[in-house]
Length: 256
Image 1 (spheres, helix red, strand yellow):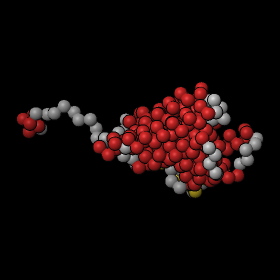
Image 2 (tube, helix red, strand yellow):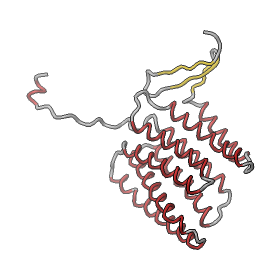
Image 3 (cartoon, helix red, strand yellow):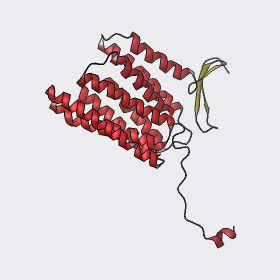
Image 4 (cartoon, one colour):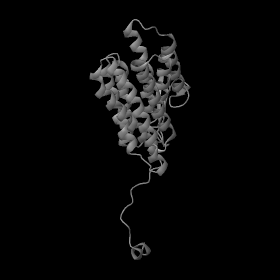
C-alpha cells in the first residue's frame, strides 16, 4: 500500500474505532491521542489565548468542542440508536452556545436546547431505583437555592427580563442532571454534575458576586463535563434489557 493517509474502520467490536495514519504509523482516535489533543487545546484556550481579538478567542474556545464532538462520533457503536444521535445533537447545540454566549440570551437558548437533547437521550436509558429517584430532592433544593440567589441579584440590578429564561434554564439543567443519574452510567453522571458546577460558577460570577479565577474554573469543569458525556456514548444503554415479548404458554414451549 502506498504511503499516505488512510482510514481503517474496525466494525467487529461493540464500539467503532477509527484509525488514521501515514504509512505503517496508525493512531487510534478513540484511544489516547484524541483525548490528549482535546486536553492540550483546552489548556491552550484557558491559559494562553488572550481576550482580544474576540474572533480569535471564540475560535480557540470552539476547537475543543469540535474535537469532543469528533471524539463522541468515533466512539459511537456500530449499531446506532436514537439516544446516540440525541447526545451528538446535545453536544452540537452546546457548541453553538459556546460561540453565542457573548450574546447571553441567544447562547443560553442554544445551551437550553442542548440540555433538552441530553435529557431526552438519558431518559431513554433510565434504570430506575429508589436512590436514583430520590436524588431529585437535593438537586431540586440546590436549584431552588441558586434560583433564589440569582433572582434576587437580577432584581437588584434591574434585570427582571432575565428572570424567566434563567429560572427555566435552571429547571432544565436540574432535570438533565437527574436524568443522567437515572441512567446509572458513571460518565454520564460525572458529566452532568460537572456541567451543573460549571454553570453554577458562571451564573454566580455573572449575577451574584465575583469568583476568583472564574474563567479557569468555568471552562475546566465545562470541557470535562462535555468530555465525560461524549465518553458515555459508547456504553450508555448497553445494559438495557430488551422489551419482553409475549409470553409463550408452557405447553407450546415444551413442543419446541
